[in-house]
Image 1 (spheres, helix red, strand yellow):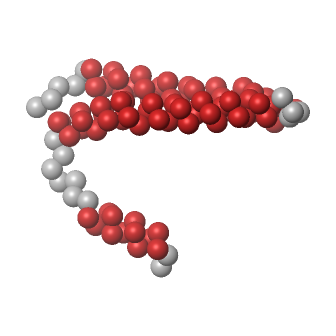
Image 2 (cartoon, rainbow, N blue to C red; image 1 turned 120 degrees about the horizontal axis):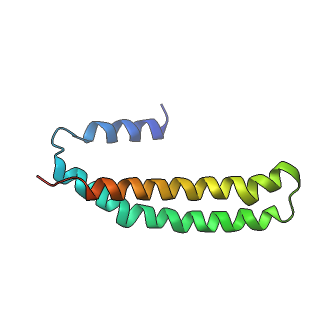
Length: 95
């Protein structure tokens, strides 16, 4: 087996998800909103900036992909994730 498989298996075996309550789920959602999504947005902005610059020298479908399709898809996915997590966090109660 590969080292990755050994690592993955040991990680899976060490995690115990038997005691997940509402407070844990709320905390996890808050962490996603406050820490993960902002980081993902910074990375996405850099990626989108780079591919939009590259689109200037592309032609045909590659130009459309780099200038419109990928940036719109990434922005839409991040917006949807942020909106869904925020609405979920606002409409659930901690035990």
